[in-house]
Image 1: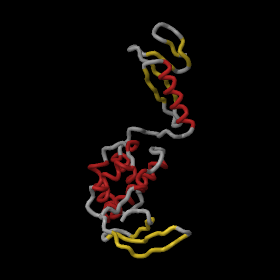
Image 2: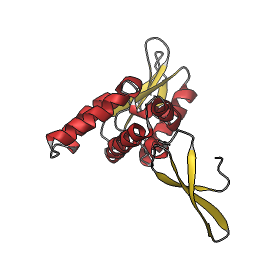
Image 3: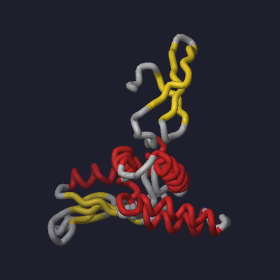
Image 4: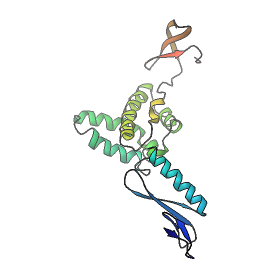
Length: 196
């Protein structure tokens, strides 16, 4: 049972610190002791209950401070240790295209908007497609390792060139679809409502 500085009982795993703020501790599903802080007892109790709920529902991650660069280094040495040297070199070339804009970011701060902005700066649709394939694999392994809840790289659009060529129109269950390709990109299917 924690106590205030004046000796009042606060409850299980809640303490008052020397500066007057409150701290609540809990153990997460990975066995690490974590703390939440607040100015009032009710605020810190609410935060503690939220964290315990996230822990029970398994919607928390093992390490919130790991950057994409750190995870890439671990991914290439652990997950891809049986790949050939040329394959690893190709991965490194593709990742170096993204390193400056994304490498310093924490894994938990990656979202579709941040990733799409970084991909828009790449030179061609081919380099965007290659980098997307690599990043999807990297972040899928991060999801498996409980470093992320979901993979934000799946939704990246690698085709930006804007000039589309219609190849075929077909009707399926009342929906009209167009099958096309960009001048420099890969084939894709899009809905009739999509803008050309």
